[in-house]
Image (cartoon, rainbow, N blue to C red; front, side):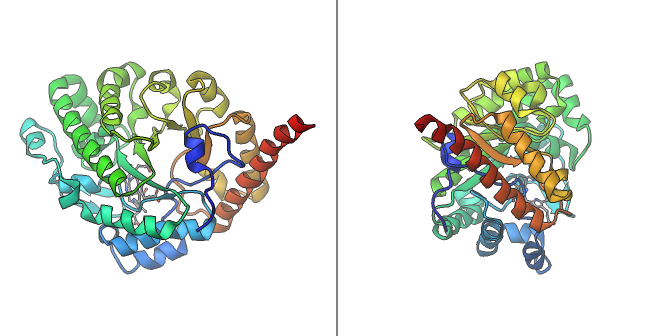
Length: 352
Ligand code: CP3
């Protein structure tokens, strides 16, 4: 589709001509082209139709000029293959939540090739269609999947999983180990099918005290990343509310840490050191505001990064459905323009 934009180079902390950008939930309801397809087909059916899932994955690449594509699917899709009855309204609903030993033991570990072949077929179509634009695969992290599995739906505090974690740690561990094994097989299959980077969404891990995160969750995340046997494929980790976990997370094995907007890029960089790249971290609400506001916010984030290699621009969480598409296009263009000027400046200066 276009020449390599530097997304993979930035994941590896190599120098780039300008800061690459992609957007969490870049295929979605804010795009009229997505809504047109969704008006004809339910969300789950769309995820399971490789030709259509590939088409909606490509929409933001064509319409916005982002520097990476992310596979169109959902983190809860493999739970269906584990035996969970899943509905989207569009918020997810799990009809048979998993709360005791019998229910955990009944969860099966899917064979991605047999049970999730539609995901792998979508990846193969996309690699043909995308040309030089890299494709990101993904999964939910074990803790975030456990949040939905135990609660059966979204929640503000996910008290069910916390209660299990604190009062029945053996049971919680059995659940986490099963989800880790599933995720390793699932991401390995995605990499085999052609994704060039993977993002692990641990969206809800930020609701834990750092000590509890370190004791109950981090060991499983490390095991997941170690188990990928991924060669050069970069791993990106996203946690909403990661600011309190930075020191714990820096050695988890991920190549890139995705940051939300509640932590400054400058502080995160200072605490993380130079061995890990960062992604982020614009507040999605800023895309609802006039262009000069958006431009100023981009400038501030680039300044906070201070020209360090290994920065991928993104939002700090998913794009809001009310976002004007024109503002997203402006964001992509502004990140490229301002970062190119900033990066070129020291290079030119050095030659004088
Ligand atoms: O463009 C992309 O980012 C790729 C596709 C993608 C979706 N969900 C599509 C989707 C990805 C990477 C996800 C991840 C996901 N899903 C997460 C982790 C990231 C995050 O946002 O925190 C979580 C927690 C979920 C679970 C989920 N799926 C929720 C809570 C919802 C409903 C509310 C919402 O945010 O839209 C979904 C449904 C969903 N997943 C939609 C899309 C495009 C909307 C469905 C529709 O079209 O009606």
